[in-house]
Amino acid sequence: MATGRISLKNSADVAGLRKAAGVVERALAAAAALVRPGTATIELDRAAEAVIRDAGGRPAFKGYQMGGDTDPFPGSLCISVNDVVVHGFPSAYELQEGDVVSVDCGVELEGYFGDFAYTFPVGEVSEAAQRLLDTTRQSLYLGIEQAVAGKRVGDIGHAVQSFCEGRGYGVVRDLVGHGVGRRLHEPPNVPNLGRRGVGKKLKAGLTICIEPMVNGGTGDVTVDPDGWTVRTADGAPSAHFEHMVLVEKGRAEILSSYALIEAALAEARGEPLASPAASG
Ligand code: MG
Ligand code: MG
Image (tube, rainbow, N blue to C red; front, top):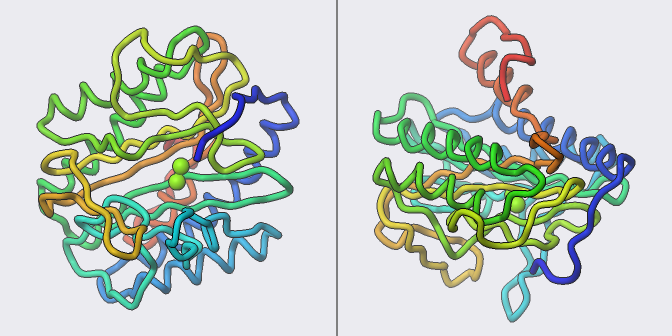
């Protein structure tokens, strides 16, 4: 998927990516507002697609061609419940108390792509499920810390892998993060495992999606006969968090944001709205 040359972005490119990420954020927030027991996952998809189209964007996943004889992806969101790792189809399945649901959204806006993901607990989830979500999310931020100019792709993967495996989880190796820009998937690949100091060197202006996919059991996965739906091989639950990141000298800048998503979650819980600046 991620073929060709690595492209470094100028400030206009970064502004375009930020704008596309903003539409993804609003689409995911619309989905977040609906995450509760009894909601069919197709309802999340419809709500997100309406936001994307109202913003003048195009759902980047809808109609995405995997290649071979696999049908194009049917949804605007990838909605992956429990043992589904990624690429789950939106469907009539109604979310149940205790589920964990990963929602990934891609948008093309004015020639730039936004792509990021969040995993939601549905109602009250088990302590084990919450720990998986927390660990996956923390590992994303640890990976992001490594996304600075002069480091290498392996530094990101190492940070994610060592943290998650240290907590007893399995990191999915068959699926990886990627560059993002005027294409949804650009080089380089950004695996969630790796060795320090190994792999492509990160340069200022590189924009990448870092997206740990972490399983409650082993990191092994299978793919359903539909050619898309990726599941844990052992049936354990899985979580997925993704951010879009700009590599700079001395620091990584996150171009995407969970602020509106978390505001929607807080509102759904009846909590006072937190300051958007308070969340990543
Ligand atoms: Mg991605
Ligand atoms: Mg994604």
